[in-house]
Structure formats: structure tokens, C-alpha cells
Length: 154
Image 1 (cartoon, rainbow, N blue to C red):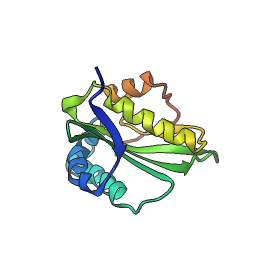
Image 2: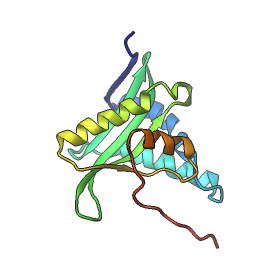
Image 3: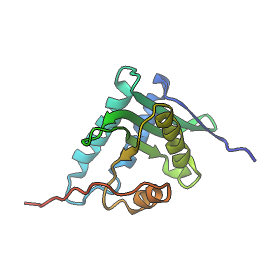
């Protein structure tokens, strides 16, 4: 049986579907953060990615199944603080209705292929400390924790 999911470049006609997925990025955010502000921020991140002009150092992908956008990944080449050139995944979103069907893995693999062709040394991303499912998913793909941000609430 062939996989009905297709990974392809983002197109402007995907904008509304991708923005509809953006609220999934609010999952796993610290509970003391204002949910409305978090939602505004994550939608703004996604909007900023998809509305930015095309650039050679950026990758925008959608996962499509049965003619419907069910996933999105945005990655960019950027310099790590150590000086190495890495791929940074700013957004990886999969529609909850198809979670667990390999779509996130397919998007990560497409980013990995892109980063490899560019000769980049690593792929990095960030997720909420409380987002246990995402952390387990990334660990299963070989991602290792590198940095930890600590917050003191006042």
C-alpha cells in the first residue's frame, strides 16, 4: 500500500490551511504563560514564515493527504552560537486527526534531505518542556537535548 501523504513545497494557496494548524504549537507551553498571548505569538511565527519573501536559506513544506494540507514545516539555515551552520526548524505542525501516521517523520526527513544537500552539520528545533509527546517523537528520530532554558517566575 502506498502512503497517501505527499510532501511538497508550500504555495500561497496553502496559507489558510497552514494558519489553521498553527494553534497546535501552543501545546506544551508552560501553564503560567497567558494562553491568548501564546496563541497570538505562534500564529505570528507561522504567518511570518509563510509571508516572508522566498529565500535560498529557507524551506517551507506542506504535507498533503487526500487533497488537504495536514502538516507544515518551516526551516531556515542559521548560524549556531558556536559558529556552525545548522538547519533550524521553526515550525513543525501536524493535524491532530492524522497524528501518528508518519507525517511528522516525513516532514523531518524532507528537512534532513534539504539540510544534507546544503552541507549543514545539524538540525535543531525547540519545543515546550511540558510537551512530552513531541519530546518523545523527536528523541525517537535521534534528536538530543542540547540547551535548557530555565525560568524563574516572579
